[in-house]
Amino acid sequence: MKILIISVNRNRSPVAVLPYGACVAAQAALAAGHETRLLDLMFEKEPHKAVERACRDFRPDVAGFSLRNIDNNDLRHPVSYAAEAASLIGLARRACCAKIVLGGAAAIVMPEALLRRTGADWCVRGDAAAAFPLFLSALAAGGAPLSVPGVCAIDGGRFVASPQDLSTPAGAGLFPEFGRWLDLRAYARNMSAVPLKTKLGCPFGCVYCTYPAIEGGVYRLSPPEAVLRAVRELAASGVRDIEFVDNVFNSPYGHAIELCGLLAGSRTGVRFHTMELTPEFTDAPLLAAMGRAGFAGIGITAESADDRVLAALGKNYSAAHLELAARAVEGQELPCMWIFMLGAPGETKETVERSLDFASRRVRPSDAVFFNAGVRLYPGTALEAAARREGTLIKPAAEMLDPVFYVSPGVEKDWLLKTLAAATRKNLNFIDSASLELPFLSGLYGLAHLAGIKQPLWKHTRLIRRGLRGLGVKT
Ligand code: B12
Image 1 (tube, helix red, strand yellow):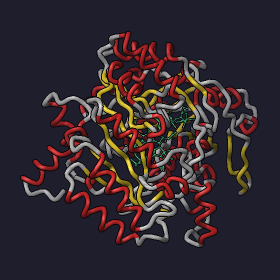
Image 2: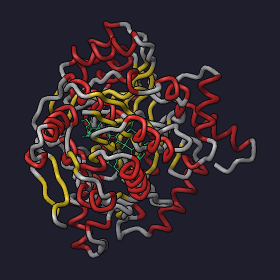
Image 3: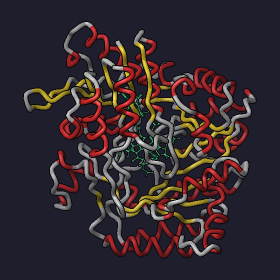
Image 4: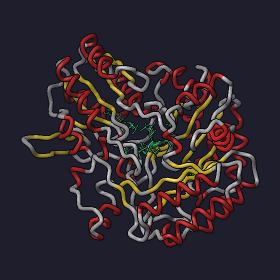
């Protein structure tokens, strides 16, 4: 069959991310013997025209829409991407006779709502490397795709779904030939690293999170040697920055340490990044191993520095772990970005102040801190159920494509946003979603690339903000 994969994501904040999942889907279709193309809309000036042209020229039998983000996860200025996806899918319907299938994290989290909103024929929930070839062969054989694990559809007005299979090993399918499908130079010009996953799954029980729904609650580890092979291939093709996009990079701890050891011995010249460290396992030996492996920037997802809030979020760690992680960070030179989420369950003015205090006291001034305000509520999570019980969420699940945020009844939203704005004004290394709204952020990435500045750009947060203030820009 002829398969066209369309990556719909055009969001460039905080950075343009490579459509990893779309590449996995395209590679899986190709490996299964289908003639396959990938259309990446990230840098397309006229996405509608690009979709129409691809559909008319290629005449695909199947158009697979890869939907990464449901929305921009921004409490201040929420933007849902569902309407844009629906309009692109409508256009594809008019331009060719392809069967239309949805995939990607957004489609896994809200399949029914997205099927209804976009009018797509099916949604495949799960890892494309495992599920997509099965779906395509069922379709090619004229069989019933709904018998394939993870496939769902609207049938006679009813949502029907076969159970997702979250047990297939994280195999070579997770390492697609990015250069075959994407314009990697365009991403490098935008200071974007090539993403790689070293495992699937997330065993943690954070009350707000969708990761276990997306990838399952049990780790499926890629052998570190296989990750190294993928790194070597990317390095040989000229890639200089790779970001590990595991849900949590440093768990299981031993797997991360083993991989770092292999990377250190391989001398590929690649700079590695990850924004996905849990404070629970961030210690001096890990950071030393990451330093030797060639990491150029790390992110620690702390969320809160208050024990009650951490417990209410379902975290396995406490504020004491944050202190230990901060000490480990101080002991070495890797630039570090700390990530917090304010307004979580149990949050009060006092707990917000505690997190802000930790950030100004324990984060090195040369490092950066990113604060999210509010918690995006997703259907099926424990926090959704709690918010309904609490009476703070009334909207039915089907309407949650337009983002809904949880803000603890213990803090007022306006107070939270004002307090955060004041803290980011005062501390040049603090940023929030407002900081990412700079209209010229992509221009800044382009200039930095031209000037030969190495990733990650956020390590220059203070300098950039000071420079922008000097130019009279409010930041
Ligand atoms: C790492 C990560 C980031 C990194 C990305 C770094 C990088 N260089 O890529 C950073 C921190 C920058 C980031 C930013 C954001 N992120 Co993010 N991120 C993730 C994370 C943890 C992994 C993403 C990833 O690369 N996965 C690996 C690939 C292979 O998986 P995948 O794309 O889902 O594809 C698989 C399947 O979905 C499927 N598939 C995909 N496409 C297709 C197509 C077809 C046809 C088929 C059949 C199957 C299929 O097969 C693939 C292989 O298994 C996910 C959580 C998760 N586990 O998904 C969140 C996640 C994707 N992010 C999310 C969000 C919201 C964002 C932001 C909007 C918010 C923010 N606070 O910054 C921004 C948007 C960035 C942008 N420009 O678009 C949400 C998206 C859902 C939503 N709410 O809209 C997620 C799901 C987390 C969550 N909250 O639940 N993110």
